[in-house]
Image (cartoon, rainbow, N blue to C red; front, side, top):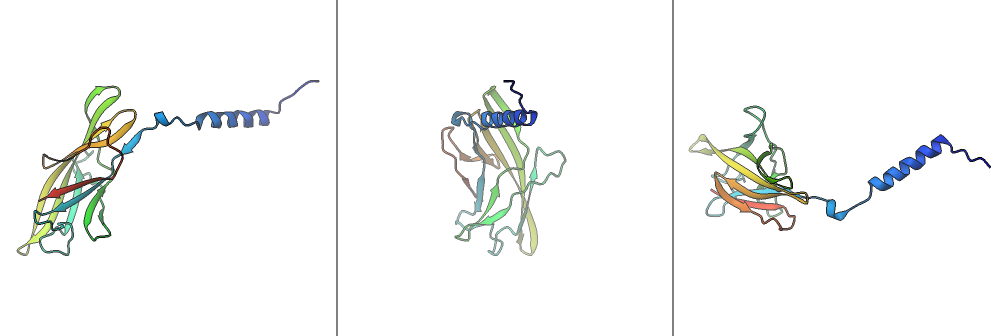
Length: 174
């Protein structure tokens, strides 16, 4: 008996075999990604400075990528509100990351730099404050995470390499 394989059936079997092999999962090969930050800005008395309805708070803002392709490279940092009516910036991504150092092929530090232009009205005049934020990221084959945040060159957040994934909460006191 002579066996002849249909070319369409051969293609289907090959495709199924390829999908089965490529969809295999190896938990050890997954990289944890942990880069979401919620940024609160308060004064020393605890007032939410991002609530534009409160006297002395910022009424508008803009965020620019210091490593951007042009002098003005806006970064999307939406203003959100908690269920307790506290306002915060949610930063997920958008600013360009540059290599800061490479301790080896499996251990690197990246960083992003952004400028925050915060505007408020003081004595009937608009006052703009330009602040800087540097975000440092740790990268290994198993994790990409925020490791440190500096606001106006002051460390405001650190995270250990073995810390679990979480939304990174940062509070700036101005």
